Image 1 (cartoon, rainbow, N blue to C red):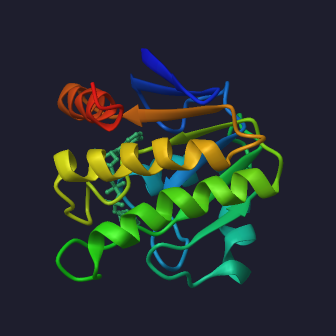
Image 2 (cartoon, rainbow, N blue to C red):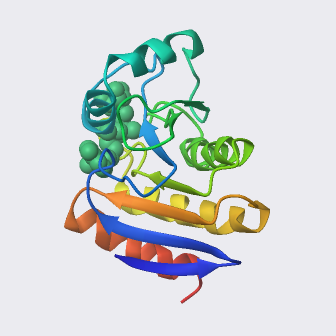
Length: 179
Ligand code: AR6
């Protein structure tokens, strides 16, 4: 794991599974509009959380690209799941602004619930086709920019699935800090 600190907020990057992050208050789901289970992150989260999560999601759906809603976490070892719908690359426009909204709105939901820590996957970079190098930069710039507005959230973790995704996020972290 590597971490940096921005205005009292620790930003961490590690390789791992978003459904196995017991030491954060909320994990973010790279959701679909209907907040159902799916492939990738949504599959891992719903499988681990159990069917009660889908039940809780039903009245909150559908959501729009850039939106984020918060629920309990079912059997996951976290207090909450925050479901964010990323843009489908090349279809939902402007993709960069919508992707940034996912991170901003997720942080807003965490703040509204007084949460101290949150873990993000790399939203939109799987089935939704967003190039991961660009997405990593949008994600890092957005959270670094938001740090000044956070009061309860003190730790933001990026959970990356493979070596390449981790490396690209570490580079984006350095660039977002102007290193
Ligand atoms: N933990 C962390 N990262 C993961 C995991 C995991 N368990 N599994 C995959 N990734 P995706 P999207 C990485 O497709 O692009 C779903 O089916 C993956 O390598 O989960 O926003 C939903 O139902 C990639 O870099 O999310 C939606 O329909 C990143 O997480 C749609 O796909 C995001 O991949 C959402 O697509």
